Image 1 (tube, rainbow, N blue to C red):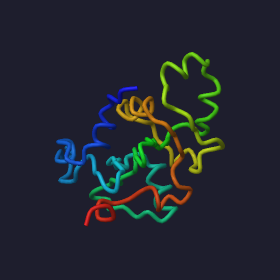
Image 2: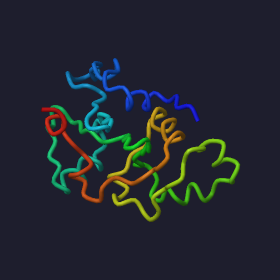
Image 3: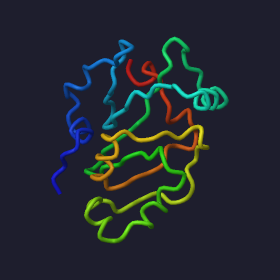
Image 4: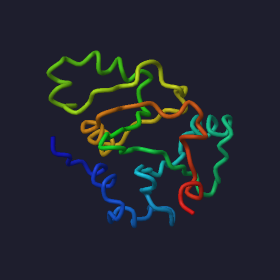
Length: 159
């Protein structure tokens, strides 16, 4: 399969123009590339999400309520996407017909089973870009069970 998603382009091109673009309400970039991983800026806007982050020890700046999360990773040609939406992504794929899986997810050979490690307050919807990227992934996995290893600040990623 030919990879054509925008995020795959970011993943394989650390000099992509998108890494220079800044968020509309900040001087921080929307996308960051480091060590074969693409991170996306996620604004912290919901009260339940804010409370949950504070409860797990991720203390964000109220004047700049944003974190970075890994979206895509590539290693030895294996493309991995991180799932942050459904409480059990494997059930979603089991509910699809075989032809739907084969047509829309032709590269996919691994989906992490079990329940998402974060409660409802810690999960969030994917953007269209992420959803299109997942259709090209070989693997779709949940984030690290320790939120401090999934939600980062820009200073933690870039020197």
